[in-house]
Amino acid sequence: MGDVRLMKGNEVIAEAAIRCGCDGYFGYPITPQSEVLETLAIRRPWEETGMVVLQAESETASINMLYGAASTGKKVMTSSSSPGISLMAEGISYLAGAELPCLIVNVQRGGPGLGTIQPSQADYFQTCKGGGHGDYKLIVLAPASVQEMYDFVELGFELAFKYKNPAIILSDGVIGQMMEKVELGEYKPRWTAEQIQEISGSWACLGKAGRERHISTSLELDPYGMEKNNLRFQAKYREMEAKEVRYEMFDCEDAEYILVAFGSSARICQKTVEIARSKGLKVGLLRPITLFPFPTPIIRELAGTVKGFLSVEMNAGQMVEDVRLAVNGKVPVEHFGRYGGVIHTPEEVFDALKQKLIGE
Amino acid sequence: MDVKDIIKPENLVYQKSHVLTDNVMHYCPGCSHGVIHKLVAEVIEELNIQDKTIGVSPVGCSVLAYNYIDIDWIEAAHGRAPAIATGVVRVNPDKYVFTYQGDGDLASIGAGEILHACNRGENIVVIFVNNAIYGMTGGQMAPTTLVGQKTATTPYGRDVNLNGYPMKITELIAQLPGTSYVTRQSVQTPAAVRKCKKAILKAFENVGNKKGTSFVEVVSTCNSGWKVDAVEANCWMEKNMFPYYPLGDMKDSEKESPESFK
Image 1 (cartoon, rainbow over the protein chains, first blue to last red):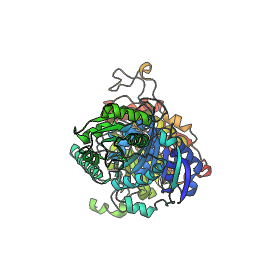
Image 2 (cartoon, rainbow over the protein chains, first blue to last red):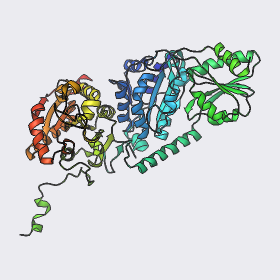
Image 3 (tube, chains in turn orange, cyan):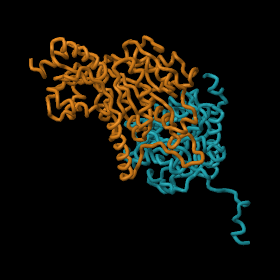
């Protein structure tokens, strides 16, 4: 094994950024994710890899700093928690509209409003269905462990540059705050000017020299031109749906009932599956890793063989809508979850499964 | 002597900057933007920095500035240009980065971003075009609209009890240690144009010398928004705006390079 450490999820985001060759981080303090910026400030990567770290005056400023830096083809990121992501919504829409690759991390807390600082998954709609204005999609990665917090930083950048689209890690206060074993990868150097030229030279704003000027914008006043842009975006999103769906299954082979859960809720549901199996009930777990693109095809397939699905989320029922769309009425789909910052227990999930689906 | 004998390269005393495109500007006749664009383009050409200059355009009439000045551009969300410029320059410290913003963009919705970018002493140029009105949306009150000035949203004149006072944001910015050069100019006469060009030149030179933020306000006209003709707009500006927004340098410090506090 390589470099194995015991680290907090938020610290690992910072470590992963440095090690994967990130060029810049712009962020603003907010609980429960402030350790990302704090860890970077302690690590001083500008002395080690040349990575820039800047505390912005607001989340609105962070996301726009990201927009500026991303427009030059650099690997840049920000992180925040729910209310801060709401403030960033404007900038995220612009980033998607200008087709700029970048990475955003949301360590979710309970809402709405100022809400609570306890963990939540209530930003599923905001992250997967919009948040900002206009028809756009983010590449959404949902980590369920500290290791995935590490791995998804590099994966997020990879997908963001592959599709010229912002990627977001939709984490929560549980994953962000808990300490867990994590294997850190090798240091990868930041891209050189030549590499940036090769990867993003056709669009990056690095100074007009011997070519047409580059304009990083989401503006197109001609509606037919804007429709064309939207068609291009939609084609890209369909391609993501065809190629980038990621999920994990536990005990689904013979399952009669399937729990669908992401992030920390999926960890809780793993225990619920154990409880159910110990009582002779054939229960499995499907964990979407990408929330967009959503694992619709596998859920559709499973709907032909199981008796029902329970979507278990730390919210009042958001992902359940996508599960229902995938199942399309074939079998019952129910939701269970605690919310407002309360975390459900495996036993509560098991009880809900029995009450809502199995009928005991 | 025929006129053709005079029009020869060796007799050329002035020409359109190569950094200006041939696109027909959408600005109203009489608007100051065209002149200010020309000055920015000339300065970029004279400093030979076209290949390392990145402009950040605002939301407002100059949202389409990228159609006219032939450099790489980033089009900002309303008010956010200084944050975008910060992002660009932080990861590309060798570039000449400038924002071009109007009064609504800079002094209203973007007041936070401009103050903090200037306070951090970001190594950028800010061109602030103050015509005391929102032009693009159809002549509404701006933070810099004068007391008593009629606009679409102050049809009886700006009332301080309702709308507060015209904001002297450039004076505020001059107080911030991050700024090295803060000046207020205008472009209504050839003499003023020449002075303004000198100020813009100095601001871009400061970026090359890593002196922190250089801020050039240009008190400007909006004859369409003010609902007067172009000549009358210039007169109105001189009579009403100059006393409240006096021209001249507010700050020109030869401060230490920001390198020293890295």
